[in-house]
Amino acid sequence: MLREFSLNLLAVVGVLWLIYVATRFARYLADAAVGNLPAEVIFNLLWLNSMGALSVLLPIAVFLSVLLGLGRMSADNELTVIAACGIAGNRIRRNVLIFTGIMGIVIALLSLWIVPDVLAGRYQLEQRAKVTADTTGLVAGSFKESQAGDWTFYSQGLSADRTHMENVFIEIQREPKPLIFRAARGHFDVEPSSGDKYLVLEEGYRYEGKAGDLDFTIAEYATHSLLVEQGGQQQYREKVKATATAVLWQRGNLEDLAEVQWRISSALMTVILGLLAMTLAHAGPRQGRYAGLFPAILIYIVYSNLLGVSRAWVEKGDLVPWLGQIWVHLIMLGLWWLLVNRYQLRHYLSIQRQAQGQ
Image (tube, rainbow, N blue to C red; front, side, top):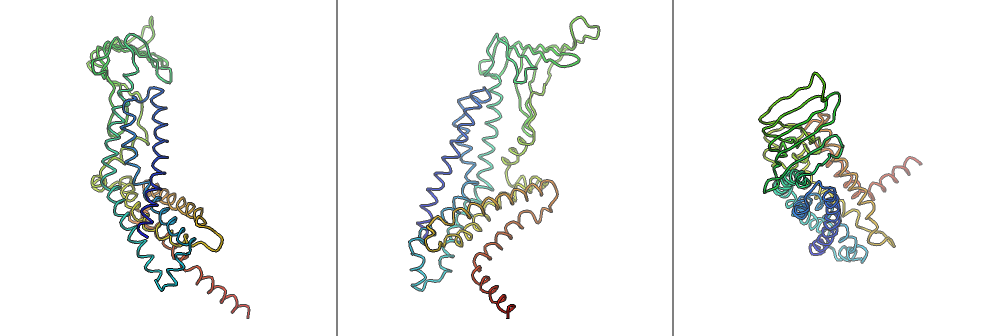
């Protein structure tokens, strides 16, 4: 059984991993095509993203591997022969728990320690890549407009490492007074905590107003920062995902506690899904080995969505942190108990109906 589960796990992880990598690769190519990402960092980001996705792909892969393994054995009547030989169902349940328990420990190690470090490296690489992309798209001696069309950039030249601009001219169209900046040097910078992107100008002048107006203002500055793009909630969430578990636990705010619970839930989810797979794998006559695949996918979607809803409630303060996502796991354990005892419950209800009819 363990060999059957392991072979199915390798096959399912391979398929899911290839789908994930292909999707991410297409997205990075689109970003590189419009100049938002340097082409040379695509494969590094792809590798870090695929490693970070293992904690998300493994729970459903373990679930499907147990389901497919036991489904094949049920369709080939191997489980029937095992029961006829006097081997109790607890032996099968023990093997499933051993397999899912080992994988749960692996997923816990990934979610709590390894994946945050990988995502931290990816986050830093993405921020550097975005800054590099802004200056890489600049051609010395030519103008470049922002995507919204309200900013116009001009740089006479770039530094040797192509990270700093020299002799910068910037025009910002706004009402009621347009802005013009001149600077000897300029570079892009990203605030690590918020993800906000700034254009930092050094040793220049700031002109505000329209030419010929009486309220025309000229100011000299040593350093001037312009907000180019706000990081937003998505950048903040990515930063939290890349933070070490010990740091999140020490800070202890609602968003950090919700993230810690989410990481722990991945391991618990793996074991509970393995138990549910046992009840769905026993196919009836003429049903085939894939009969339980559709309800299994439906259960996984409901399970993962409930965990996501519980996480959002904890972040917003609508749910007390100590309850967190425990109630979702208890509901799924209750569903497993109902599926295991469904025949006894059906027999009990039929007896009760007969007693009421008499």
